[in-house]
Image: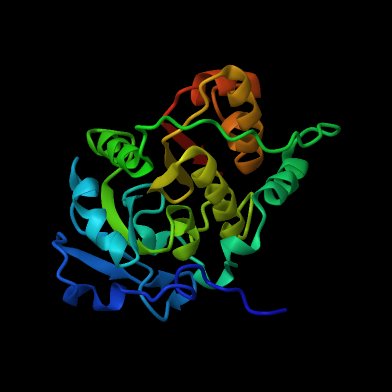
Amino acid sequence: MAAPTVTGMATLPNPLPRLASLGLALPPGRLIDTTDEGPWHEPLLWLADDLAAPGTWDALRHAPRALGLLPVTIEADGSQGAPEGWDLMPGEMSYPGDHDAEEVLADLWEASAAEGEEWPGLAEEPEAAEDDDPDTVAAEIADSLLAGGPLKDPRLALVPARRSADIPTAIGWTGPMNHEGDTARISAVLRSWEDRYGIRVVALGFDHLLVSVAAPPTTLSDAQALAAEHFAFCPDIIWQGSDTTLAEYAERRLVGRPAWHFWWD
């Protein structure tokens, strides 16, 4: 079997080793190369030293993007602390582009749904509002998280990745390990949602993920079709959430909602 390809690091020159010479107006921070097997051969992300404040995401997202660096908010004081304690495994991840999102979701649905419940297929792509720019929505959601939101000690980070959906794979994030061991398959689904719903990966914790949504479903029927994808992607939203059925989840968490939150135990 061929060795796995590491998203971002293998397909994109990593600017992090020369970050100090790029002239970016970054706050004090550090490069992180810690994995579950010791130091990685190059940095996986840059992490700010200080607590992130509203406005910092938007101030930094433009210049780094041109260099192949994308922003994400890191929960640095969660159950496993900063990313150095997250058991990052970049060498175990394949490439998101090698996976078909619907095939991934169908596989995950079969593993989690009740016996006899057939995979209903992907939801239809919604019509996006003309004024809902995904990056602007992401900045707004990031600001809302940083203004006293649920994240513990949120820090701004920069990750070398071609697109926001690839951020978890690029750093070797293992948050969904108990549900899916290859995070590239998770990123493949995120890519599909990026294309259809304008999502951006806004925040990562040890085992949870939050995305902004520029074009959420606006009708209950569209939301119910999408809810099946969410359940396959992360069954804990139902098994451990406050909504006991997909219909309840669709109505309360998806219709018109500009952010989706997933967690895996």
